[in-house]
Image (cartoon, one colour):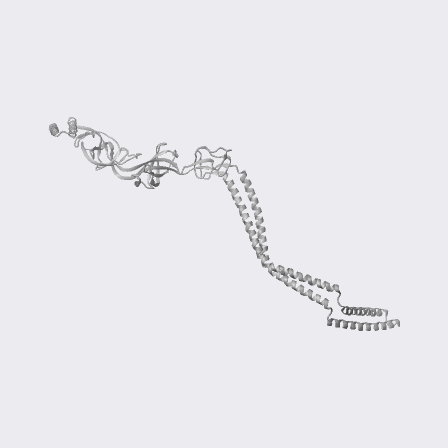
Length: 509
């Protein structure tokens, strides 16, 4: 009965073909004939799987070093020693080479001597300023005292001259006359007393020693009398001319001293100018000292410049300069390529630039390091495209292990711009197309079931399908001439392996 049904179905299909002949009908007839001739179709099935799948935008470009520096000398000098070679790893601040510092050391000693000289000059200038300020404070008072003292000397000399010229005063004359009369009276008394004593001594009434005592008293009275006579004679005769001349000379000297003191007093305002001059000398000495100290710093910097240090960590690229070479200001000493500053500069078409942004993760493949994937993150996106290909530059910081990656290598990067979680994935070859429709076959109860699906993202040799149950058995081999509802026999089952491909793109369905 079953066989009869199959023949009847074949007859109907033949009749239909004769009524409307077209290519599609012919293909369907051939498929039907195969089913009739071989009613049970052997197929290979593979279970669908569920996983995450992402859409990627691919970028290409070169690996560049963010820190790539050719280190030169700041001065024209002879290279004494080179401490690194090509390929050496260096750390920031490491000594790379040294230059001859003989001239710089001599310059430093000269500058130090100039500082010592300038320091002494500064101390002397400050001392002069202190003295000038003291003179400015004390000088006017001192000159005033000197003027007053000179004026007093002039007055004294004038009085002495007047006294010499005018002679003794009447009071002094009367005093001299009185002194002469008193001395004469005393002398007369002593003369009488001496005469009486001589008589008594001669008579033996008194001892001879009494005569000696009276004689001494008489002699003293006689001397006083003569002195009084001379005083009277002096005031009567008047002062001598030489005394007058001396008094006049003393007055002139006193007057000259007064003029000198007065002239000195007039110089008091100049003391302020001396302070200003001393201040200027201090400023000049200070400037010389600062200049000398600056020369020390210049010499010290020149010594420091004879040592070449690594500005950052990295590796020596190329052969450094040889020791003994005279390096100029533009001569390359060592080239350092930073290991922590390696970037991947990729190009993104304008159609995809809106789908990438800083912070996005990137899977990087470097041609010079095959079979290895490097991780990275977008650091910057250039807002301006180039004028030729309308490509935008994207800088990607390579993170993690960068062993083998060197500047200049060509690289490709995949940026995940969209991720679908819990997507149903099947082998790509299991999906068939008919016009704009996509379908596949599953196996249920020993029969093939055609399922119309919408395709999505791909992941390696798998593709996302929408409209399929996750637990379906998908026909992966033998589905090309399979009909919906046909009996099938599972000849084998393939396992599904989910991998992260280097490239993935969306299949439009």
